[in-house]
Image (cartoon, rainbow, N blue to C red; front, side, top):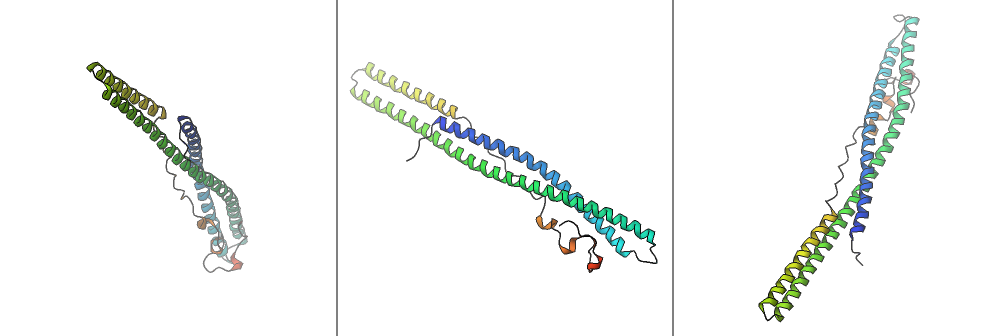
Length: 231
């Protein structure tokens, strides 16, 4: 059976929706912060990779007798420093990625929840307004029925005027009641904003493949590869 929507049940749903909307707005703020933080981590990660790779290339190109042991030691130290920075950046990147993905999941879930609640609220509001309008129509029909009966029985001008006055008062009361009921419902709830595009990263762009590890470029063999970065 269809449950009649009352103002109290609608207001309860409206509270639920507003709560979902507040949660969604909160996750929107969070995801925007995470996008910035993750973007910074990505940039540091990519820069550290490029630096480590360039240092590696310089290292493997250093050959005797054009490169002295002291010069090679400097290049090796520079590479090890760059590799350490890259490994550290990888750790930070992975941690930030995990945080970002958690925020992303919460954001998507909050959006799904608020959209569902918004639709339910609109449907309930529609039903409530329909109930109000139906009640108004019933009141008008009743006033007209009473008027028709009174007019049919009236034999004097005074009786006809009285019947007309009763009808006018009934119609006016119905109009006032309908307006009050609609005002109590209030404005249409604010629609949740569309989610922002989360194209700050692509998983495939940041998963190191064999050709993406610092120290491996072109046709370099295993003997050319330094200590592998953290997977």
